Each structure stands twice: as structure tokens, then as C-alpha cells.
Image 1 (cartoon, rainbow, N blue to C red):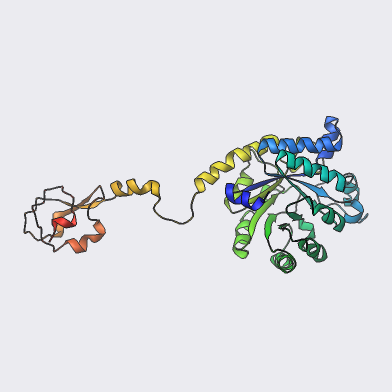
Image 2: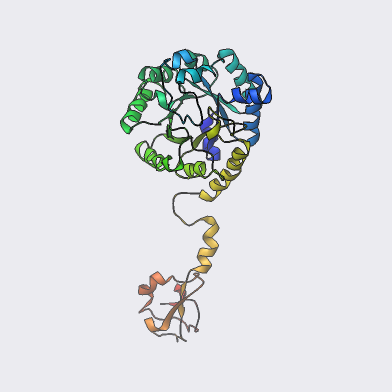
Length: 354
């Protein structure tokens, strides 16, 4: 599936970031990992989301054994990146291939973020686009490696400055197709609402007018999914949000994930926003033409006017409908001669005047 064509057609593209949340879902529901992952794919599809995204890594290739945490340890108590990632790194090519085929069967797009060269290589045949994590925006060798595979890229920009984004974009342009989605992101788990800085979406649109813009969200889901809807209104066409079947499971990414009901709210409400957003170029719409004609004003005779009279300003008033001479032509009407008698309240037309 061409995700850009779909985004263009419906006005948005919604990604359920399953990540590794299926591990805890498997434990809670007594399922094996593959079945738990497939169940989450089913629910994402049922809710109307466009894609699911996993995370492909091995802890040994991702983090040093001495890497400290950067998340809220009241929510996820593990204080070592290595130890946390090691809990969730059992899947490899065969498992992701099975999930990719399952997604194809279910008609939902399969994505996975690679975090090392090996996973980037085996995902090449499985994903239509690559996702590069915020954490790798300065990992130039890795960006070059992925860009060299000539697939579009979703580039997350969390915790980055503009010069770092430009450097990464330049590498993608020089090495690959140059087709890229820049995802505004705040690398804070969870992101307080006051830290979301959604206006950065507008600045990315301004700085990179030739690129698609998106938003990767780490806020807790609000009651009406207003954070994601606002991101879309500001220009984020691609929207990625962590996804769980139980956002109250402690730890990992559940606490800032949307669940099935949240996703349904989003997919039911976004089409309405697309509908009311409409065109951007201000002009008279086809649906307004009748109203334009009848609700505007014409020059109208305020008194009885005899044939041969010279038209003076004091003879004229302005009334609906706008089917006669517009008031903006008044300077051309004053001083003209009435060809025929003009009744009081009669709408002026050019054939009445000499």
C-alpha cells in the first residue's frame, strides 16, 4: 500500500505504535507473544487505524549495560535501559515476517522501527517505509544505511534542534529517495500536556515546505483525543500514538498509550474535521452562489424617476437582491439619464439608463 496516497486521499494517516506492548498483553491474557501481537493488530484494524508499528531490536545492540533510564520511573520502575530492552527483544526476522504477512491479510500497514543495522536489513522486505527513532537523528551512519535502501522515511525529531534535523534531512536527500515525513515529537515519557509544544508542527511546515509533517505523541490520552486532533489541525498528516489493549498496565509504554476506545474516538472524529476544514484558498464557493446573488444589494430607486431625469445620489438606495447594478458601481450610475420611467423600489439595471 502506498501510505502517501492513502494520506492524500483521506487527509491523514494514523499509526498505532504497538511497540513491544504485546509482551504484557500476552502475560495478562494468557497468550503467546505472536497471538498477543496479532490480537493487537486485529483491534487496531477494527478501530479504523491505518497502520501498526512495532520495534525491532536486540538489547545488546541498542544500549550499554550502563545506560540509565530517561523515563518516569514512577511509571516504569526499571532504571537501566539495557535491562528494560532485554525484557522485550525476543522477536527477530521470522516473527516480524509472520506479523507482516498477517497485516497484509488484515489489510493494515505493517511498520517496525529498526534500532540496529541487522534489523534495518531484514525489515527491508517487510515495510513500505522506514521509521527512524528520535534517538537516532544524529546517528549519521545509521541514517545513511537506511536511506540507501531507497524507501521513504518517517523521521522522528524528538529532543533535536533545527540544525540536527537539517543535517539528517540532507543525509536522506543525498543518500536515498529524499521522500521523508518529519515527525514532531517530545522525548519525554509521559509528555505533560504543557510540554507537547504542538506549535512546533507549524514551524516544521514552514522550515520544510517540501516535506510531509507528522506527530509522534507521548502524552497521556485525553478524554476527546484533542491533542492528536489539534496536531492534525496544525498540519500533522501522519499521526503516531502508542497503542495498548489496557493502558492501565503498569510500566513500559502502556501509561501513555491510547486503547481501543481512544482510537475509535479518533477515527470517528477526524473525518468530521477533514470535512469542515475544506479548501484553503478563499473564494466564493459553488454552494454560496445563490446566496451571493440574492443576499447582496443592488442600487434601487428610492423615488419615482421620470424618463429623461438625470440620476442623482439622493434618488438612490441600496437593497437586496444583488441581481441589479452593484452599489460599487454607483459612481458610474450618478449622472446617467433615465431612458424610461423607473418606479420607486425598482432595481436598477443598465438597460434603464442612457
